[in-house]
Length: 126
Image (tube, rainbow, N blue to C red; front, side, top):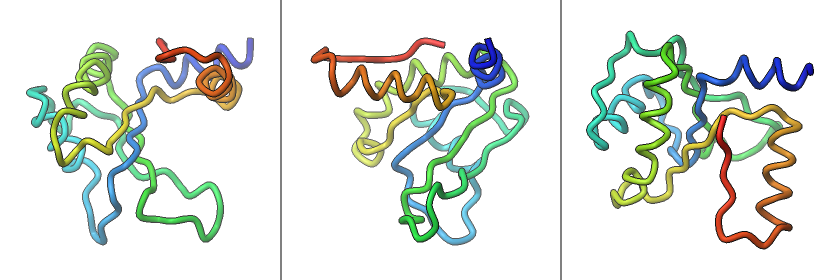
């Protein structure tokens, strides 16, 4: 039940992987540029927070630090998540991945399924 509550609190969040870190970057601008590239009409008022996640281990490569996106509306979050396939078709974003913000337990289950169940595609649906 604690895992369910924690996952519920993350339901409006997505995590971006593969955006190189730049000094003095603005995470909001990065996300708004991504949204515009897949024809989503979003602005800064559609989010409660956007920022880089702290590094999990000291000394880890900062250039690949993930970005968490906190949407105010679940519908905007779902639209962005659905548009991730379009994003991969744009050359400059082909190495960018959009994932749901999962609890530690749910992420371990997801990773296990991807690695061990020999499925073509494994995905989450929050």
